[in-house]
Image (cartoon, rainbow, N blue to C red; front, side, top):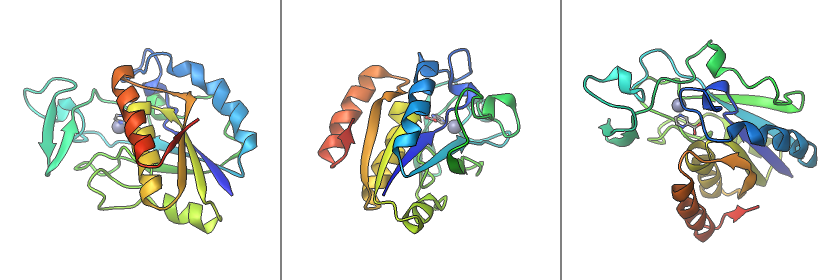
Length: 196
Ligand code: VGL
Ligand code: ZN
């Protein structure tokens, strides 16, 4: 049984948003068409409280995209995005959601960011998505959505560590940094993942 995992298709990650991914809007129809070819469809939603420590505004004298160590974990400081309950945190209305059986929220702990849909970045807490997928008999996952070089990649990579077959759907994801994503793809394939 295979599952499609749709990562963070939220307004704040679309062009014009505070963390807008170039051409991020172009993947939505592709994701809609793909859904019917999977046994199960799930999604994630980046869902930050005000004052989340991944925001540069939560630290003094820090600029967007600066890197710091946050409780021992490397952290890129982002513009404020996906604040709980705001329009920017909503799943984009053009995304078909009728077949999405579960939505896993992440990034709710102020002290630690969460790129992967499975764990926070320190791997201290699981979202429950792995158990959910396993409970549904899923052995293989395909990951799409935003952003390719962060939440999509971390989710697909954790899926491998958790024993799933895992692929990234290249035509249904867009990176923040295209050059970085090319390197990431090589690394993911070396680890046993597939790019489709
Ligand atoms: C993401 C940075 C910060 C993502 C979420 O969805 O890729 N990136 N929060
Ligand atoms: Zn975030």
